[in-house]
Amino acid sequence: MSPTQDRRDFLKLTAAATGALGLGLPADARALTRPTGPKPSGRVKRVLILGGTGFIGPYQVRSLLAGGHDVTIFNRGNRPGMFEGVEELVGDRNGDFESLRGKSWDVVVDNSTARPDWVTSAGEFLRDSVEHYHYVSSRSAYASHSAVPMTAAEAAFTYETAGVDRATADITRLPYGLAKAESEREVMRIFGDRHAIFRPGLIIGPDDPTDRFTYWPVRIHRGGEVLAPGDGTDPVQIIDVRDLGDFMALSADRGHTGIFNLVGPATPRPMAELLYGIRAVTTAETTFTWVPREFLAEREVRPYAEMPVWRPPTPGAEGFARFDLSNEVAHGLTFRSLADTTQATLDFHFSRTPERQAEMRPGLSAEREAEILAEWHARG
Image 1 (cartoon, rainbow, N blue to C red):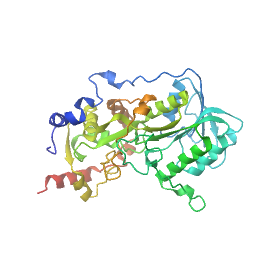
Image 2 (cartoon, rainbow, N blue to C red):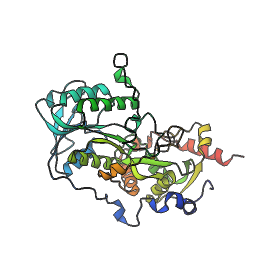
Image 3 (cartoon, one colour):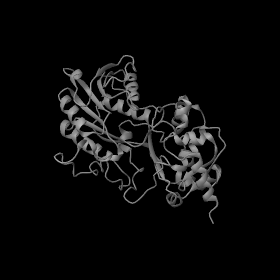
Image 4 (cartoon, rainbow, N blue to C red):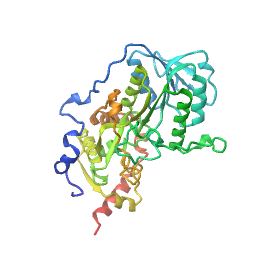
């Protein structure tokens, strides 16, 4: 494949393997409508959210309110008044739970921590005050992504099963994935079968402070020659923050228990499909130059950092973006179109201050991108 092969030629070449019609970009505006998922149960649930004012919390709150549920948020009170009709309780995960005393809820949603000691303290305090404990973990809790396809049922205990020796380990400073895995074990220990654990991958969309997906819509919107990593076939599974919020609200509504991998779409999207799908939302004159990962590695261009979202399969990580989501879809997980996510992300980005727009956190700078492209074109 020519490095700068245009979209038409590329899709002709890869249609059989990647599904050219699977861009998630229908021919009319109906594509921007959220797919219809299962209807709420009709019973009003009392839901306590630990956190609720960060990136993912507000979307959970809005989905729960839209379903007619009663929502309480518990945090340090640094962002009061974000939601109308939501009870706000002030406290601290470090041990100040007094505002929760004497109250009860059907479901608690724990968004706010990768610290197992915080999960332990909150879980022990709320053990007899809630029916179900829903914990937001991470795909990083898996010690290995070697299974293909990955399923929550088959890989539920493939993360660090040795556990942590609390007599010797600093429980507050564990590596992120191990901290999430240890937090999951605490949830299971305290709540038995009254828990649900959600393992999202990269969470994207409006209000994302990390820019890890935002880099691509913004870069493609700028136009010109875009450095694209690999050969376009590496799979991608990510999740729109609104789809995450909707599924977690549905899980609270229906009392889901068990382990759920929250990524999408259900059929992994090749990197080329992602980038061409993003370009279809913009009016930019853009070409893609696909640069092999070996060439990028020689120049210390790192997957998932300088090339956000992209993580080519490596030994032991063949299943990283190949999750089997049949169980999650059966429980009501739905996926917005790539067009919807891209447009919402661009709208959010351009609503930020000019200074913040200029501060794209991951990805290549324009100068570094141009330098690598020049080296690629000049190769002998």
